[in-house]
Length: 249
Image (cartoon, rainbow, N blue to C red):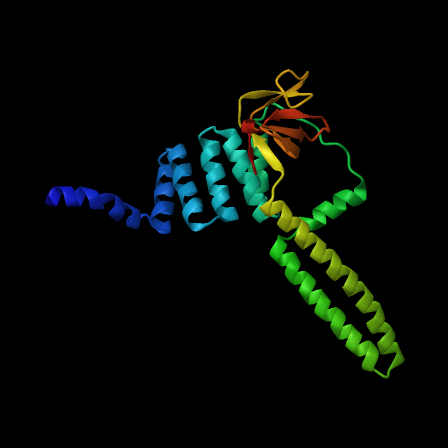
């Protein structure tokens, strides 16, 4: 009877012992001992149970990279960069992992202003852009106060000019915050996980074969229809593939 009670309570005790620190220690030990897949599993348990961070995705990606599971490594590096776009370690390791991908597509050239816009938007995460917008808006309000209540003409003119600029920048920051948040909660990029997949001209197996993609390739989801997804790759090629061939970033 006592033995049965002890066996029943073992899972509860084990679950209680699985604290974030113990899981991180187990992940680190497994990594140092060369058990990379096991290390990744411990890190992912931390992410599933206690929340994610750019550093945690970095560690998961490293473990998968060492285990030669390139698609999983790329997926986690990409997820980390969504949380911290300026993280140099994530950027460097992502480039290393992408070098192992069979499909090395060249990105379509973008208009210079579009590249600047995207680069500027990626400087901060959504919450930071929201705070920037709030600060700039209150600066705009202060400029309005000076403009309406100051009796000094040069000061009013300066307040008006600064107010216009801060109002526009506040709106732009709010736009950045919204777009960054949308990309985080509703990501439309994915990583292919099947060894290879034939992209079709229509959402059906009878569709014309267009081109072949391999695991680790990043695709952008344009639309979905049933179990099929319309994707576009960096070189601009578009087609349909089964939705179970990729994992959303």
